[in-house]
Length: 108
Image: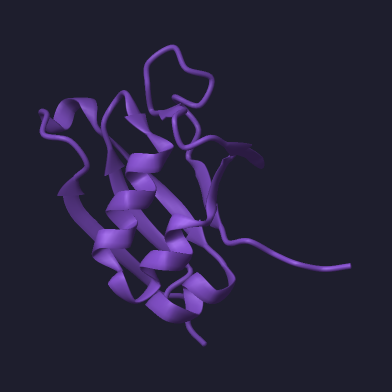
């Protein structure tokens, strides 16, 4: 299966484009199957919370909305809370472009 990327143009918050950064979000497991791609590109404004990114993705991909809501974002291989900011100047994640949406997993 060829790698496919969906590009999202709309911003998460209204602001001039000079302040937004493009981030690739890697998509895994059931979410990837539901939306048909392994990566989406989003524009993230400074001060955007991880939960806002998930909410935006859930709106864009209603077929995977419930699974997106219970998934977690990881930045630089570390999970972040929904209240944590992504792309905020001075934040430890401000220059990081490695973001992943990880659905719940089970195992023994």
